Image (tube, rainbow over all chains, first blue to last red; front, side, top):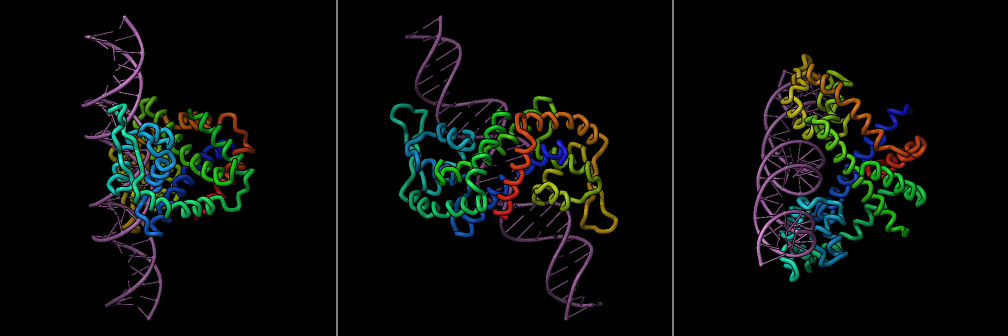
Length: 144
Length: 144
DNA sequence: ATTAAATAATTGATGTATCAATAATTGATA
DNA sequence: TATCAATTATTGATACATCAATTATTTAAT
């Protein structure tokens, strides 16, 4: 492949694959009749893994902007899967917790999420994934 | 790295890198005072590479849904960079063409787009890119 | 202690993604 | 040829991404 082609193809493919992955997750959730999106799931899971985390930390952890975090949390709150609790030490901060219902839906989704990951990496060896990760890191650095 | 980690890390990184790349492009365009987004650019460039193409073919080529194509073309049309011409053989179809202004902006953007690609693949060898492409194809197949 | 700077979260505006439904037209089939 | 199916494009609804601006609060500096 020519140089120019190689560079544009891999970047295009990077974007379309990421988009396809997101679409795939959303469809699998829907197929299981779970009313959640892939982005809502990322936040929900991460709150559960760090109960009490605040919004800005959650945004850093999930690589989402504060504005997006705010709005997606509104949805999760409406679904009663999380709560925002006032932080006793700072009135600016909300601490985030999953609710009982939240934990229920997490328990349902976890095995499905595993299936999704397994499917996505089918026929790809660990070594290749490691290499893949390294290249993604390199690209991220380049775009830093 | 543990198996589970490896699988979830690489998928997360795939998505965040794609997102970062998109953000990067938009910022570079803005920095050059060019009023275009990365998605508008993809469509504009592809119309130019296949003048007369119709919307559904353009969508396939750019891996975008018809609805998204329609709306982004509305924007490009408003900016007077493209036109939708009635197809004489089928009243359902519009043929897409870049305008004079469209070609002007394309000429301005092309070298910038090259810079972006060059920056993104800095310090990455062709062989690695080829391998990277193969893995992306594999993942795409898995999610097909 | 006051003022200035930084931080946490929200809101508004615009653009894109996706699904679902629809309109208009064309193609296939019986 | 009349009907049914497929195709092309659009629109509506909802969610997310991003930038910019704003509010409220906290921290730092003078």
